[in-house]
Length: 88
Image 1: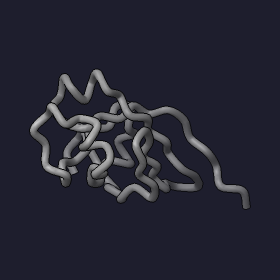
Image 2: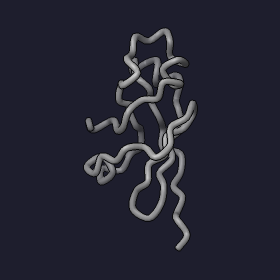
Image 3: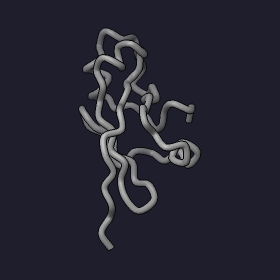
């Protein structure tokens, strides 16, 4: 994983960015990702058109799709949105 991305891009996201010449396995760029999460490099537990979800520590980190940033970076880009905690 690079310092700006994690996991694999989804096919549905690639279809939204048809004008960008991207392969379906392009790593998404994550904005606002904690350094510790980058080092652990987990795979997303959920991928859909607008969101990536990573299980991390005692909860989930949620990232939302950023269309303008994706076009500017020529790769799927997601902005950190919020953290949820798993109930014990």
